[in-house]
Length: 170
Image 1 (cartoon, one colour):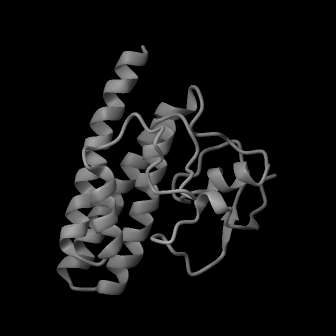
Image 2 (cartoon, helix red, strand yellow):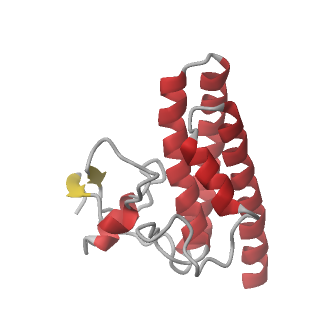
């Protein structure tokens, strides 16, 4: 299936701290990875559609690395929005960044995103120090400069831990 379809956001991708204006997610069930669409592959998976599984096998390194690169681009946009005091743009970009971080976090642990019972699952072995507390702070103030800096640092810490995991996997 390559045509976009609208699916309800599965319960596994819903959390009270991470609200979505729309209860639907646009999904392109393709065999290629779509980094710019947070939670797309996870939503397709939970709905039983055929899609690439970025958290499995050989896909993990390529997909997680692509999301880290995407964040670096969005990060500069967030910084500009913060500097120009454009709170609306800052919040929109930060919410996308938070979703990208959650993808990296769960996929680095070889599992799809599942935040239904909490932002950080107990099973996560690779995670930044005090990651849950820091992410909850970010979620409570997504438009602030300090939240942006915390999210950027969470990405950097997770990227280092992921690199170590990939080296050990060889």
